[in-house]
Length: 306
Image (cartoon, rainbow, N blue to C red):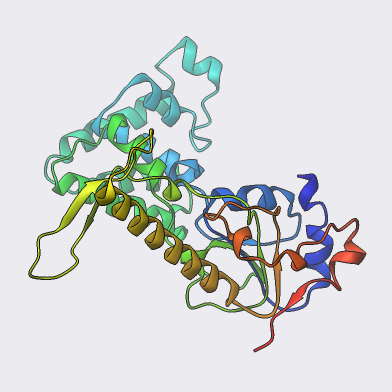
């Protein structure tokens, strides 16, 4: 995190709103780990990293696909107050016996009611104030939809799915926000930092197949793109150039969107790079300076002039 050792002083000096905007969530991880000042990270962590969602998933599994892990997770909830020794020495703790009876009733009820209704009854008993979190309602909508689609509510379904899902975007009144470029569309900040400008994203890697309709009356142009030996005939060479141009145009669009979020100050943070798939390729070398202290950083920030 040494490369962002300056960030807290810079953030504390700047007045007004600040947006830290990255091409991907991964590009925001390093700078976020360096920030000690109060800030809002907008939907940067997947749902499965949220303690509340882990608890709700355990309650769901206990009702719909019980296993030893879900039983231990439920018994470990602070509201029950069952110690690890009590869990491992006996399954007949009074509180667990009482709860287990309710669980059996809910397992019978699940055949006739949406999953959210059954899990909410358990949550009301075991998870205080769950209803104050938007992510809980997002979770319940998800399991109800899975149920309607006849997809089993088991660990094999829920864990991978929740690992790819992110909380609904909510914007509080925090002065400093971290978000992706996509999330920043339509927003403006007094000051903007774009970190990791030299890095690319997975989406920039070669696709295997390209399909494009040049004219409504003509068939689609379909062909392979990736050729490790670069033995490209004229047809495939055309396809490769088309996809490269498309990706480059999209990169320019993203760079424009990110840069125009700033009203007063725009700060690019990254290394010089000749990689045409990185934001650094758009930044004039004159704007890339080696800074040795925060005192050099503040006056050298790139000002945006309309």
